[in-house]
View 1 (cartoon, helix red, strand yellow):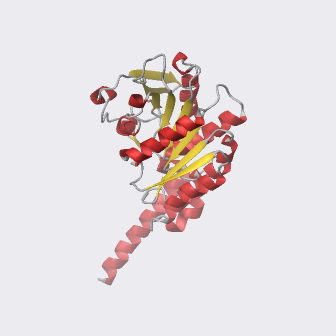
View 2 (cartoon, rainbow, N blue to C red; view 1 turned 30 degrees about the vertical axis):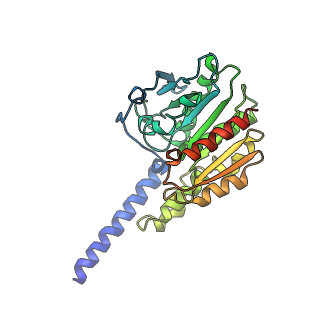
View 3 (cartoon, one colour; view 1 turned 120 degrees about the horizontal axis):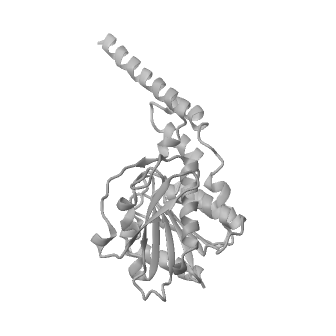
Length: 291
Protein backbone atom coordinates (compact mmCIF):
# COMPACT_ATOMS: atom_id res chain seq x y z
CA UNK A 1 0.00 0.00 0.00
CA UNK A 2 2.78 2.40 0.92
CA UNK A 3 4.53 1.66 -2.36
CA UNK A 4 1.33 2.36 -4.31
CA UNK A 5 0.80 5.64 -2.51
CA UNK A 6 4.38 6.66 -3.18
CA UNK A 7 3.93 5.93 -6.88
CA UNK A 8 0.77 8.03 -7.05
CA UNK A 9 2.52 10.88 -5.29
CA UNK A 10 5.50 10.62 -7.64
CA UNK A 11 3.18 10.70 -10.67
CA UNK A 12 1.40 13.77 -9.31
CA UNK A 13 4.66 15.58 -8.60
CA UNK A 14 6.00 14.63 -12.02
CA UNK A 15 2.83 15.98 -13.61
CA UNK A 16 3.13 19.21 -11.69
CA UNK A 17 6.76 19.67 -12.71
CA UNK A 18 5.98 18.92 -16.36
CA UNK A 19 3.04 21.33 -16.30
CA UNK A 20 5.15 24.06 -14.74
CA UNK A 21 8.01 23.45 -17.17
CA UNK A 22 5.69 23.65 -20.16
CA UNK A 23 4.08 26.85 -18.92
CA UNK A 24 7.43 28.45 -18.14
CA UNK A 25 8.71 27.59 -21.62
CA UNK A 26 5.63 28.76 -23.52
CA UNK A 27 4.36 31.45 -21.18
CA UNK A 28 1.08 30.91 -19.40
CA UNK A 29 -1.02 33.61 -21.04
CA UNK A 30 -2.96 30.70 -22.54
CA UNK A 31 -4.70 30.31 -19.17
CA UNK A 32 -6.82 33.32 -20.17
CA UNK A 33 -8.15 31.94 -23.45
CA UNK A 34 -10.58 29.08 -24.10
CA UNK A 35 -11.93 29.65 -27.63
CA UNK A 36 -13.97 27.31 -29.77
CA UNK A 37 -15.47 27.33 -33.26
CA UNK A 38 -19.00 26.15 -32.41
CA UNK A 39 -21.93 28.35 -33.46
CA UNK A 40 -24.32 28.20 -30.52
CA UNK A 41 -26.91 30.69 -31.74
CA UNK A 42 -27.17 33.41 -34.37
CA UNK A 43 -28.99 36.73 -33.96
CA UNK A 44 -31.76 35.80 -36.39
CA UNK A 45 -32.80 32.99 -34.04
CA UNK A 46 -33.61 35.76 -31.56
CA UNK A 47 -35.48 37.78 -34.22
CA UNK A 48 -32.64 40.29 -34.42
CA UNK A 49 -31.44 41.92 -37.60
CA UNK A 50 -27.70 41.57 -38.04
CA UNK A 51 -24.79 41.87 -40.43
CA UNK A 52 -21.62 39.78 -40.53
CA UNK A 53 -18.54 42.01 -40.29
CA UNK A 54 -15.02 40.90 -41.22
CA UNK A 55 -12.04 43.05 -40.26
CA UNK A 56 -8.38 42.64 -41.22
CA UNK A 57 -5.78 43.26 -38.53
CA UNK A 58 -2.40 44.88 -39.10
CA UNK A 59 -0.64 41.54 -38.52
CA UNK A 60 -2.64 39.59 -41.09
CA UNK A 61 -5.53 38.05 -39.12
CA UNK A 62 -9.20 38.34 -39.99
CA UNK A 63 -11.73 39.04 -37.25
CA UNK A 64 -15.41 38.21 -37.40
CA UNK A 65 -18.10 40.25 -35.71
CA UNK A 66 -21.80 41.02 -35.72
CA UNK A 67 -23.45 44.38 -36.17
CA UNK A 68 -26.90 44.52 -34.55
CA UNK A 69 -28.84 47.67 -35.47
CA UNK A 70 -31.10 49.35 -32.96
CA UNK A 71 -34.77 48.59 -33.34
CA UNK A 72 -35.55 52.29 -33.02
CA UNK A 73 -35.84 54.19 -36.31
CA UNK A 74 -32.42 54.11 -37.99
CA UNK A 75 -32.25 57.89 -37.88
CA UNK A 76 -32.66 57.98 -34.13
CA UNK A 77 -30.74 55.28 -32.19
CA UNK A 78 -29.85 56.22 -28.63
CA UNK A 79 -26.24 55.15 -29.14
CA UNK A 80 -23.97 52.19 -29.83
CA UNK A 81 -22.54 49.58 -27.47
CA UNK A 82 -19.20 47.95 -28.31
CA UNK A 83 -19.17 44.57 -26.57
CA UNK A 84 -16.00 42.67 -25.64
CA UNK A 85 -16.83 39.17 -24.42
CA UNK A 86 -15.28 36.81 -21.89
CA UNK A 87 -12.54 34.23 -22.33
CA UNK A 88 -14.50 31.13 -23.36
CA UNK A 89 -16.24 29.96 -26.56
CA UNK A 90 -17.11 32.87 -28.93
CA UNK A 91 -19.61 35.65 -29.65
CA UNK A 92 -22.43 33.20 -30.37
CA UNK A 93 -22.34 31.93 -26.77
CA UNK A 94 -22.16 35.47 -25.35
CA UNK A 95 -24.85 36.97 -27.57
CA UNK A 96 -27.57 36.88 -24.92
CA UNK A 97 -25.62 39.38 -22.83
CA UNK A 98 -26.36 42.12 -25.39
CA UNK A 99 -29.34 40.77 -27.36
CA UNK A 100 -31.69 42.90 -25.24
CA UNK A 101 -30.06 46.20 -26.21
CA UNK A 102 -31.40 46.73 -29.78
CA UNK A 103 -34.96 46.70 -28.43
CA UNK A 104 -33.92 49.46 -26.03
CA UNK A 105 -32.74 51.61 -28.93
CA UNK A 106 -29.02 50.79 -29.02
CA UNK A 107 -26.87 49.50 -31.86
CA UNK A 108 -24.50 46.73 -30.78
CA UNK A 109 -21.18 45.67 -32.27
CA UNK A 110 -19.47 42.55 -30.95
CA UNK A 111 -16.35 40.82 -32.27
CA UNK A 112 -14.47 37.60 -31.77
CA UNK A 113 -10.81 37.89 -30.91
CA UNK A 114 -8.27 35.98 -32.98
CA UNK A 115 -8.77 32.23 -32.64
CA UNK A 116 -12.39 32.56 -31.51
CA UNK A 117 -15.37 31.57 -33.64
CA UNK A 118 -14.81 32.53 -37.27
CA UNK A 119 -11.77 34.71 -36.54
CA UNK A 120 -8.39 33.42 -37.68
CA UNK A 121 -5.21 32.96 -35.67
CA UNK A 122 -4.48 32.01 -32.07
CA UNK A 123 -5.14 34.26 -29.06
CA UNK A 124 -2.63 35.83 -26.71
CA UNK A 125 -2.76 38.96 -24.57
CA UNK A 126 -1.06 41.31 -27.02
CA UNK A 127 -3.03 39.96 -29.97
CA UNK A 128 -6.42 40.30 -28.32
CA UNK A 129 -5.58 43.83 -27.22
CA UNK A 130 -4.86 44.71 -30.86
CA UNK A 131 -8.09 42.99 -31.90
CA UNK A 132 -10.17 45.03 -29.47
CA UNK A 133 -8.64 48.22 -30.85
CA UNK A 134 -9.23 47.09 -34.45
CA UNK A 135 -12.91 46.66 -33.68
CA UNK A 136 -13.24 50.04 -31.98
CA UNK A 137 -11.51 51.88 -34.81
CA UNK A 138 -13.86 50.28 -37.34
CA UNK A 139 -16.86 51.21 -35.22
CA UNK A 140 -15.81 54.83 -34.84
CA UNK A 141 -15.67 55.18 -38.65
CA UNK A 142 -19.22 53.99 -39.28
CA UNK A 143 -21.84 56.56 -40.32
CA UNK A 144 -24.37 54.90 -37.99
CA UNK A 145 -22.35 56.13 -34.99
CA UNK A 146 -22.00 59.75 -36.10
CA UNK A 147 -23.09 62.21 -33.40
CA UNK A 148 -24.38 59.38 -31.20
CA UNK A 149 -22.95 58.19 -27.88
CA UNK A 150 -20.60 55.18 -27.94
CA UNK A 151 -20.20 52.93 -24.92
CA UNK A 152 -17.78 50.10 -24.26
CA UNK A 153 -19.16 47.07 -22.41
CA UNK A 154 -16.53 44.55 -21.36
CA UNK A 155 -17.35 41.34 -19.54
CA UNK A 156 -14.73 39.36 -17.60
CA UNK A 157 -11.67 39.13 -19.92
CA UNK A 158 -13.39 41.67 -22.19
CA UNK A 159 -13.42 44.17 -19.37
CA UNK A 160 -9.68 43.78 -18.83
CA UNK A 161 -9.12 44.38 -22.54
CA UNK A 162 -11.56 47.28 -22.40
CA UNK A 163 -9.68 49.03 -19.60
CA UNK A 164 -6.43 48.93 -21.57
CA UNK A 165 -8.19 50.07 -24.74
CA UNK A 166 -10.21 52.87 -23.16
CA UNK A 167 -7.30 54.26 -21.15
CA UNK A 168 -5.13 54.44 -24.27
CA UNK A 169 -8.00 55.99 -26.24
CA UNK A 170 -8.39 58.74 -23.66
CA UNK A 171 -4.68 59.40 -23.16
CA UNK A 172 -4.10 59.69 -26.91
CA UNK A 173 -7.14 61.99 -27.18
CA UNK A 174 -8.57 59.82 -29.92
CA UNK A 175 -11.77 60.99 -31.60
CA UNK A 176 -14.63 60.56 -31.28
CA UNK A 177 -14.46 60.08 -27.51
CA UNK A 178 -16.07 57.24 -25.61
CA UNK A 179 -19.15 58.25 -23.65
CA UNK A 180 -18.96 55.53 -21.01
CA UNK A 181 -17.27 52.27 -20.03
CA UNK A 182 -19.08 49.39 -18.31
CA UNK A 183 -17.02 46.60 -16.71
CA UNK A 184 -18.87 43.45 -15.68
CA UNK A 185 -17.15 40.75 -13.61
CA UNK A 186 -13.69 41.96 -14.59
CA UNK A 187 -10.44 40.95 -12.90
CA UNK A 188 -8.17 43.66 -11.56
CA UNK A 189 -5.14 42.64 -13.63
CA UNK A 190 -3.76 39.83 -15.81
CA UNK A 191 -0.73 39.28 -13.61
CA UNK A 192 -2.70 39.40 -10.40
CA UNK A 193 -5.46 36.99 -11.41
CA UNK A 194 -2.94 34.55 -12.91
CA UNK A 195 -1.04 34.31 -9.64
CA UNK A 196 -4.30 34.00 -7.71
CA UNK A 197 -5.63 31.18 -9.91
CA UNK A 198 -2.31 29.33 -9.99
CA UNK A 199 -2.14 29.54 -6.22
CA UNK A 200 -5.61 28.02 -5.86
CA UNK A 201 -4.68 24.73 -7.58
CA UNK A 202 -2.44 22.35 -5.65
CA UNK A 203 -0.50 21.17 -8.71
CA UNK A 204 0.57 24.70 -9.60
CA UNK A 205 0.62 26.25 -6.11
CA UNK A 206 4.37 25.70 -5.62
CA UNK A 207 5.05 27.44 -8.95
CA UNK A 208 2.62 30.35 -8.66
CA UNK A 209 5.31 33.02 -8.37
CA UNK A 210 7.64 31.91 -11.22
CA UNK A 211 4.68 31.09 -13.48
CA UNK A 212 3.05 34.47 -12.83
CA UNK A 213 6.30 36.10 -13.93
CA UNK A 214 5.53 34.89 -17.47
CA UNK A 215 2.44 37.15 -17.51
CA UNK A 216 3.01 40.77 -18.41
CA UNK A 217 2.12 43.34 -15.77
CA UNK A 218 1.85 46.11 -18.38
CA UNK A 219 -1.95 45.91 -18.49
CA UNK A 220 -3.04 45.65 -14.87
CA UNK A 221 -6.49 47.18 -14.75
CA UNK A 222 -5.96 48.80 -11.36
CA UNK A 223 -2.99 50.68 -12.82
CA UNK A 224 -4.85 51.96 -15.89
CA UNK A 225 -8.51 52.43 -15.00
CA UNK A 226 -7.83 55.85 -13.50
CA UNK A 227 -6.51 57.04 -16.86
CA UNK A 228 -9.98 56.69 -18.43
CA UNK A 229 -11.21 59.79 -16.59
CA UNK A 230 -13.17 61.91 -17.44
CA UNK A 231 -15.04 59.09 -19.25
CA UNK A 232 -17.68 57.75 -16.82
CA UNK A 233 -17.09 54.17 -15.68
CA UNK A 234 -19.49 51.65 -14.17
CA UNK A 235 -18.03 48.66 -12.33
CA UNK A 236 -20.38 45.68 -11.95
CA UNK A 237 -19.44 42.70 -9.82
CA UNK A 238 -21.36 39.90 -8.17
CA UNK A 239 -20.91 38.98 -4.55
CA UNK A 240 -21.49 35.37 -5.71
CA UNK A 241 -18.95 35.40 -8.55
CA UNK A 242 -17.16 32.07 -8.29
CA UNK A 243 -14.78 32.77 -11.17
CA UNK A 244 -13.55 36.31 -10.50
CA UNK A 245 -13.91 37.04 -6.76
CA UNK A 246 -15.75 40.15 -5.62
CA UNK A 247 -12.60 41.86 -4.33
CA UNK A 248 -11.46 42.39 -7.95
CA UNK A 249 -14.45 44.61 -8.64
CA UNK A 250 -13.87 46.49 -5.41
CA UNK A 251 -10.22 47.08 -6.31
CA UNK A 252 -11.10 48.39 -9.78
CA UNK A 253 -13.74 50.74 -8.41
CA UNK A 254 -11.37 52.09 -5.79
CA UNK A 255 -8.69 52.72 -8.43
CA UNK A 256 -11.10 54.44 -10.84
CA UNK A 257 -11.45 58.21 -10.90
CA UNK A 258 -14.73 60.09 -10.88
CA UNK A 259 -17.23 59.97 -12.45
CA UNK A 260 -17.80 56.34 -11.45
CA UNK A 261 -20.53 53.99 -10.24
CA UNK A 262 -20.40 50.61 -8.52
CA UNK A 263 -23.17 48.04 -8.99
CA UNK A 264 -22.88 45.04 -6.66
CA UNK A 265 -24.96 42.17 -8.02
CA UNK A 266 -26.03 38.71 -6.91
CA UNK A 267 -25.75 36.31 -9.85
CA UNK A 268 -23.25 33.73 -11.11
CA UNK A 269 -20.31 35.00 -13.15
CA UNK A 270 -21.35 36.77 -16.39
CA UNK A 271 -25.06 36.30 -15.68
CA UNK A 272 -25.76 39.94 -14.83
CA UNK A 273 -28.32 40.58 -17.54
CA UNK A 274 -30.73 37.83 -16.62
CA UNK A 275 -31.98 40.26 -13.94
CA UNK A 276 -34.17 43.10 -15.33
CA UNK A 277 -33.16 45.50 -12.55
CA UNK A 278 -29.50 45.21 -13.54
CA UNK A 279 -30.38 45.96 -17.16
CA UNK A 280 -32.22 49.06 -16.02
CA UNK A 281 -29.23 50.17 -13.96
CA UNK A 282 -26.96 49.93 -17.00
CA UNK A 283 -29.46 51.80 -19.17
CA UNK A 284 -29.64 54.51 -16.52
CA UNK A 285 -25.86 54.79 -16.45
CA UNK A 286 -25.64 55.16 -20.23
CA UNK A 287 -28.42 57.72 -20.40
CA UNK A 288 -26.86 59.71 -17.57
CA UNK A 289 -23.40 59.56 -19.18
CA UNK A 290 -24.61 61.03 -22.46
CA UNK A 291 -26.34 64.05 -20.93
